[in-house]
Length: 325
Image (cartoon, rainbow, N blue to C red):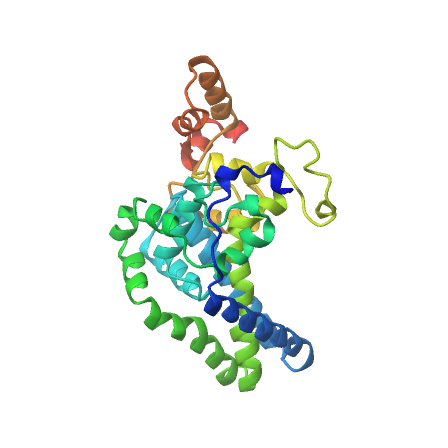
């Protein structure tokens, strides 16, 4: 994207690098690279499989926990499920659920503007990584103070995880996996630290960042006729589903990584629902979309509001409109 094509109102102030964050990211990625080398040279198969399991659990904490449950309230969860997802989110070693949700709420509210902390108009590298290596934007920090977080404060799982985060994160996020690798798998200290520690954390950070930057990988720009003319089409399926998420963030079926309805994470959430641990799964039927479009066109009301009026809870859809679900 050329500089002329970027709206100046969406550029925002030029911020300085936060060098401790820059050095941390360099150190983390170099350590993760060494961990990846150890996977192919020294680590046992059990260590590698355990690392994959931890990455999977951490991804559940990010997507089904921080994103769909605590940010967008696409469903309700029982206490055991909330505790499990909070445990999984702590494995990422990124930040507390409270801070993650606050950051993502600001991202949604100011998506694509200068107050978006990961503004996609600056390109993929900024949206995915470099925004985490800059000094805090005072305007964005001010916006965070005006975001409603009463629902997070009322959830004592989120509350206690936030206030005890720097006490429990080193134990759950680093010491526990490394110790399991050494004590129960019989791995060496070096392999456990660099594979189950640094490599896993690095992979989970990228999985978390992709929740906000995948918009550029999997999304098509509806205003650009040549949006699909990219080499990425050979590796990923590009569609308008990422844009759909920013229109209907409360739809539980909208996947973080470019999928809709049939993704693995949606299937896992339905399993939790079948077990009675998740309820109130919110979505919309095709009939509801048609009704919302017709109402918006007829009355001139905002489409997002009309769509929200037509949303349903999953059991209601299965009971009322099974053919169009």
